[in-house]
Image (tube, rainbow, N blue to C red; front, side):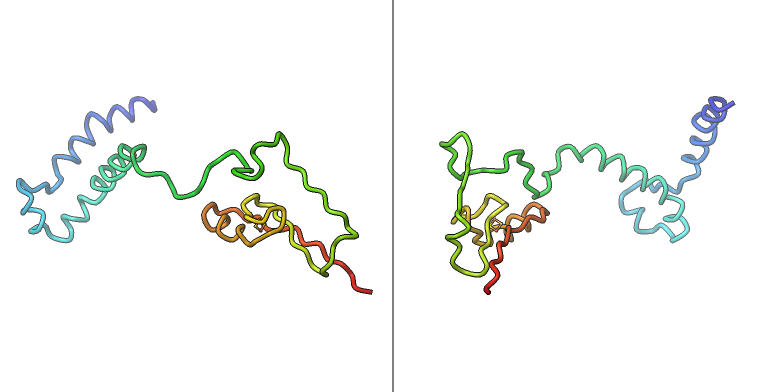
Length: 135
Ligand code: FES
């Protein structure tokens, strides 16, 4: 039943639909089409536009977003593991910001490079802020 319906659409209704379309003989003929003729062409033009887009989509430039799998791109790459130790007693100011985006030029301290990283990638990383209570 379903295949019969599909077969009828492809073999009978689609050719009849295409035959009734007001396709002009020349490019200039499109300019002379009426609004109702354009409306009748709209479904076909939409399908052709969709097929054209799907055809060229693999060749379109990729989005600007950075898709790397590495988190650390340049900090202490000579070391097998980056570890920073900070003694809590050495915290002098009341607020210290530590980088969690791995883009800071003053790593491990945040230099606000995360703002550019977030803008480029759509990420939402920010620093770890240590607050010291002043008694
Ligand atoms: S620079 Fe990395 S979190 Fe701010």
